[in-house]
Length: 406
Image (cartoon, rainbow, N blue to C red; front, side):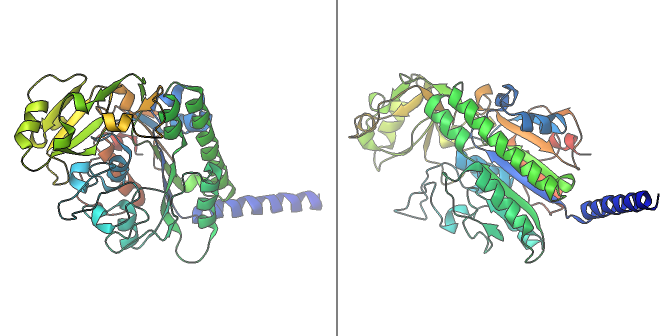
């Protein structure tokens, strides 16, 4: 009897200590991006961990910002501002104030990133600690600040290693606890481009990311952190099929010797060379083009919220979903691999194939909520609410996504 009583008391002590540990565990917010994870991928049966988080939390098909490409939308998610306002207007861009320079996805000069403040900077400036397990801009000192923890991007780093790095950061007791961290996966987007959104390779990539998210959940549970963690899972854009034959050859529409091509693909950005403005506009504007529409930057439809930033070139063209621009020179470049059927994004953000994943789960989130579609600028206000960080002036609001909050 005495032994039984001792066991009961010991068990009670263990349970009490466990409850106390959970109470003491600091609140954590994790923002996960799965690049190119189209909203409807969640219902294919390949991602049981994320499906369970959605069912026990909130989900939506989220609308990306224009242009629906990687860097502009990742910076929108963490600044709450549309690309026209935060300044990362494309995966490639130029700036008249930086002559001779071209922004690429490896550009680390703070001048490219300084038109808006990413969320991790606000977290740090307001006395909390932030971390970044990959995210566009996280390697750059912005407003004089970097996340307390960050790593140089390596697209070949396995998903489980990315998760383990975050868990290691959480275990490191060398200062205040981390309050916010990002986590980024690129494999779904890679396979979507290579094989198309309906391929077995995309489904396998989605399953691998789901396993990594499961590893994160189990790691948080083992540390007594899961019940005090809000997890927000997003994508930057969706993915559309891109048949090999669906190419718009710009040489057939305009004299390419008269233009500087800033971007090609779903969105084509063009700057006429000096003295060629009238000739280029005559070729591209105010007439029907095959599978593409072009506008002067100040005539881009208002629903895209794009065209006022000085970094937006004078002419912007949007391809019909499933069509891509190219040039004869690009098509005949030595060593170039022949076109094959694959996938692409960058198309109209209102197209269903561009809709991005959104899941929110945690102690701050209601259970079983399906939200109407909303613009991805609304993610920032949600992050601010979850962390208690004072928000910058942003383009988003809690009007829709706030319905998921307890």
